[in-house]
Length: 279
Ligand code: AMP
Image 1 (cartoon, rainbow, N blue to C red):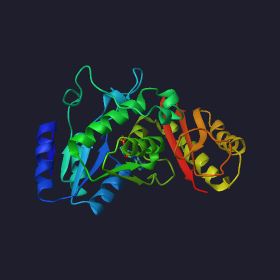
Image 2: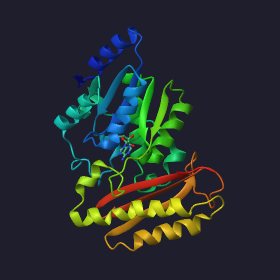
Image 3: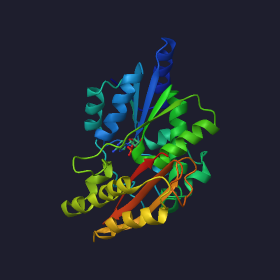
Image 4: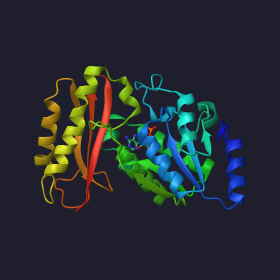
């Protein structure tokens, strides 16, 4: 497995592989890898000759008061996991390799204004920018993203379509802990007590999945889902919403494909979860 830190050495290796006619899959990550990331890497391994993982805590997707400095990092462990999963190359640049001041941004505004975009107004602009850069550096045939970040996945799909990237976007299901909590690098922030409280997200998602049916109103569905979270003293709702699966705009009824998504603070840690419903 190769480890590259610069755009130039990464491109050189990718070009050599392309010359040999190899297909390239890319798994963008911010590191501190867990089984959620591993599921993307495994899928990528199945579908491509070459597996590239990017491991980069992207500063432009963090707001000024967010956890950029505290975000967990462990490159040694990430690198061992990637190697064990058959990764061919990890790209782990320094921020100075990726960004110069000033620099261009990419954004898909309409899809970025609801759900997480309300609380994190610059987040998706940072995501679209770094993913565009990674797409240009790695030039993959396919790129892998988790349904855990459902709004991100919808935005990337839209960006790829609108900006004519010749890349297949592969969405992968949410990987959960045995007790239901969606795996996340941020789960490490939780104390034992908070870890138990965090189960209110997956309990609420599970209830939503059980009671959703074609035509149910958002008010009825979300009211019941919110009640599960509100019963947990350590939890504070950021949002629990039902939106159109493609436009990310709020809908009143589940009468077409929708995304039901939430962000909840457990203490200071902001966690997300969701499910999709297809009519
Ligand atoms: P991150 O390192 O948090 O930026 O995540 C990198 C990729 O892994 C994103 O496409 C995430 O959606 C995906 N991912 C993170 N957690 C999970 C999970 N629990 N299940 C599936 N995919 C995940």
